[in-house]
Image 1 (cartoon, rainbow, N blue to C red):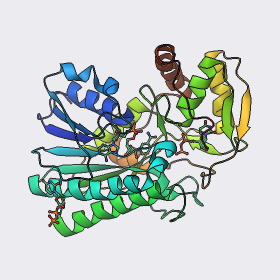
Image 2: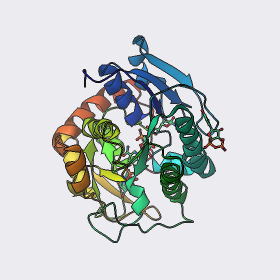
Image 3: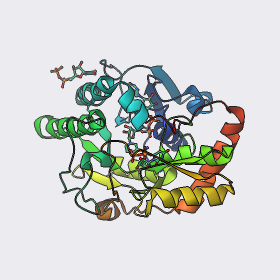
Image 4: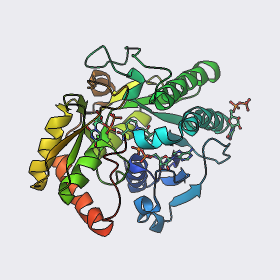
Length: 328
Ligand code: NAD
Ligand code: UDP
Ligand code: UDP
């Protein structure tokens, strides 16, 4: 990567979990990085180290409003990803995906920038096809609690493909599956952060439903590597492309792994399953293997261990932050 030409890269949602890792990676590759974020779920702590780098620039801005900057590449990651936060203000969530996509596509069109959309496995809804391939159109409730996120992301994909067909924009659409690692929000309610913080505190581990639902967890470094590879592909590679780890585990098994890795005395406790919670999720990543030559290589145990170390440090400095285990 160090031999690649220097670029000006815009990352929306750059102060969030994935965005901050992506900023760090692109600064490491010697690019200029413009991080745009409204700090809804992202934090200044996530990017504090990066602010020391003169190639890094931070702009507080909400992507639902137009943005006029000059850049060569755009990674559009702005959108809350945790159910608790995206359901807190569902209208703003849809606006962020839809108005945000329109503004950034308009920007990409004006400056002739390549643009990548962080889409999601949620476009498949509660899938009837397993594992999920890109050709599957999904099984999504258009009017439920998760719809602001799922349908917002689906509409953003539509806009990307319409700008591609109508204006010949260079687009890349990544469908990201559950990703975890350091800098996940401590109180944002996602399963990996919840279980780790609960285990470290010796609190009950909150399993929603009976814990038989599955997810496939990808470590953040693997995912960021795939996003950068996808951005660098020839113009004919537009996606949508599944990015994730194929190791499928039940939520209950994840809880047991976290208890064992943290050597915690926490017990399992059961809560109601949220509405429309997908029963199974696992990506078919044949396309990414073929077009990116990419395959995730951090095993779940190792990624969890690294994430546990991060939360061990954070939990000690922020003991009062709630984990939202009871919130739904
Ligand atoms: P995150 O909540 O940590 O990051 C999202 C960032 O976007 C935050 O910094 C937030 O403040 C910012 N943001 C939200 N609304 C905004 C707005 N209107 N204007 C500007 N900034 C705004 O979540 P994440 O896990 O880092 O997810 C990043 C992207 O990847 C999201 O688009 C998400 O949908 C997608 N994704 C993530 C996962 C995952 O497992 N982490 C899976 C699928 C898709
Ligand atoms: N836009 C932006 N930055 C730019 C160019 C456009 O935010 O550098 C916004 C603009 O406000 C517009 C949207 O992107 O609402 C879509 O732009 P496009 O040119 O596709 O559509 P139009 O301006 O014709 O509605
Ligand atoms: N989950 C759980 N306990 C928690 C948080 C989440 O059992 O404390 C479950 C949740 O119901 C879902 C899975 O873990 O089945 C993944 O949830 P997350 O919010 O991390 O991601 P998503 O549902 O968007 O895949």
